[in-house]
Amino acid sequence: MAISVFDLFRVGIGPSSSHTVGPMRAAREFALSLTDPGVDRVRVTLRGSLAATGVGHGTDRAVIMGLAGETPEAIDPDSIDGRLEALEAGEPLRLPHGQSVAFSRRDDIRWDDSCLPFHPNAMELTACCGEREVASNTFYSLGGGFYVDQATADRDGVDEDATALPYAFTSAAELLALCHEHEMCISQLMLANERVWRDEAEIRRSLLHIWSAMRESIDNGLAAGGHLPGGLNVRRRARQLHEQLLHPQDQRLIVTSFSLMDWVNLFALAVNEENAAGRRMVTAPTNGAAGIVPAVLAYYFKFEPDASDDDVVNFLLTAGAIGILCKTNASISGAEVGCQGEVGSACAMAAAGLAEVLGGSVDQVENAAEIGLEHNLGLTCDPVGGLVQVPCIERNAIASVKAINAARMAMHGDGEHFISLDKVIRTMRDTGRDMQDKYKETSKGGLAVNAIEC
Image (cartoon, rainbow, N blue to C red; front, side, top):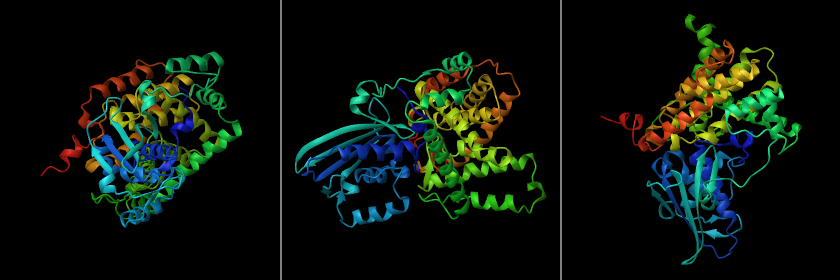
């Protein structure tokens, strides 16, 4: 299966790529398939993790907007509450082909936390004309906004996109071998692969658009105050921290090596607070880990005087290569392998991107990714209250600093190291299989349980 960098970096809305972005896209696909003008009812069953933490992740909201034909890229986040209130007041749900459906969130959405065999993020959709069922399908949200329907799942989840890439790779070893053979860095190889879908000018414009959306999420997070929605009463911290860094009252906060870390923390907090509030952001590779890549890239731009648009392109192309490896050989879904698949993958991606723009060799870049992922192995996904707030927001800040450290450690070496990136990705996959389900985005174990104990 050919995966593009733009499959990993998607402009969308929070709070979750697997619980919000993927279900919205899948619901829209189902709604677009409903051409019978007599369709007057749609029923939804959320299964597994989508049911267990779907309320906190806004899955029901996302599905309804998808059925109305909305996409995560284009929807106005400020419009959602009003549209749902109108639905609750009795207005019909209008499907993309014009059918008016009387839809009740209480009666037409069923929550069932039992899992289907293919993947824990499952959603069953059924459409009826009166009492007659006219269409049904099951969709699986795989993380990062990716999803497949039942027919694809029956083919072992293999996507039908068989685009031939000039430099196809399925492992880090193959990626490195291709780079050495053709005397290319990773970003150059990825650029050549991306050209099968779009020309170089469009690739560049699109990557800079991704970076612009990332910067906007940082800026919006720095400007917003108050508390995050959802009931935990979690206070936004990015704006206050920004003020402290701009106008330090404590001499210990004046620019030092420690304050550099404060800026990295700040950028990550800003993005993930925006994500937790259901605002606009970019999957990188998921929403729950969306702050790490932009935080490290923003750090580079703040403290590297010669940073340029070329660095953005090379950083994101390299980060994308690592994300593709993680997705292909393990998972980027917290519901499948825990948070090691989200924050761990993002940390590896950011570390590799930074090493690339710092001038690292292909071996040093691979080493940076390996260090970043290795030291997130076993990380559980246990969001308190089913919300991507605690521990998710701080976890992104910690992993952003870790990614920078991983890149720096790799740059001080010659690229030779004991454990390969392929072995670490395989370990992430195996660890995820062994991890108990309560630690995989169900809010039934770990901090999600202990945080509310009396």
